[in-house]
Image (cartoon, rainbow, N blue to C red; front, side, top):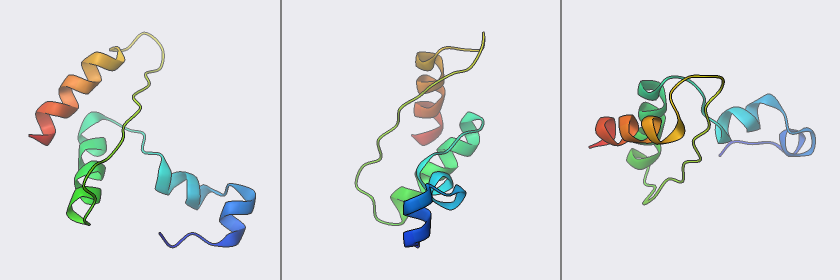
Length: 68
């Protein structure tokens, strides 16, 4: 994945950015698609929401629609 020992030791921004995607559903769907096109046969998502926005199930439905 291009992560260095220093990234692993210090939990650097590069490592976090490669493992965690946060943004709107379109950006997250694009990141999932990148992984699938690179050869992943599955991608695990753990959906969180912040504040009073739409809940995780709403976000999951929007992502599913975008990834069809």
